[in-house]
Amino acid sequence: MSKKIQDYLNTLRVRDDSHEHIVRSPLRVRKEGSATCIEGALLAASMLKAQGARPLLLDLKVGARNNNDVDHVVALFKKNGAWGALSMTSHAVLRYRDPIYKSVRELAMSYFHEYFTDDGKKNLRSFSKPFNVDSYAIKNWETSTDDLFEIAVALDDSPHENILTKEMERDLRRADLIEIRASNTL
Image (cartoon, rainbow, N blue to C red; front, side):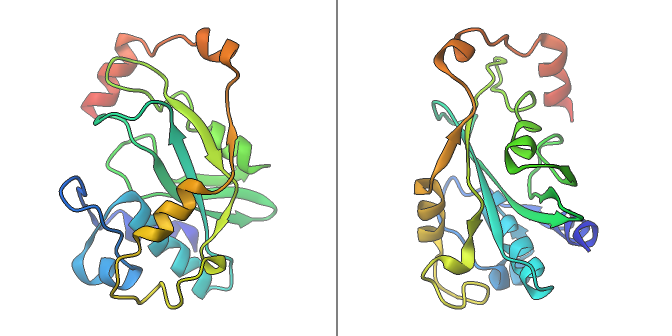
């Protein structure tokens, strides 16, 4: 079923929230036909919940934030004991992950090398522990007409695991020109 959810996410337009920092509910996303990454993750989580799974999100957090590099949020799912991810993005490599990862860390690391700025700086620095949307205090988040931005804040403030030590960070090689060109042409 996760493949069908991802196929549905792929039909939505990517919504630019640079002018309006809100998080819309899954119901509003379906009505309006567009989503940011967190809205797509919430929609996927609500669909997984309807199938009996826990609605889990994963926050992939960047180092220094700038206009070209932002956090990314995916919905987590588990199949046959392995983790996978559903994603709403226009970026070719920050998308769906098949359920083949033994741990959430392993899954998060699958995004590391492709997560770089326009000048090639690898910028993924931490990831959240699985965040259960139902454990957050907003009732009926799936159908709410209110702004759900506080879920984004709670996810951002939730416990995160660092990916790199300072020594590792100093030794990172930038993405090369071929990788940068490929990323920009996809």
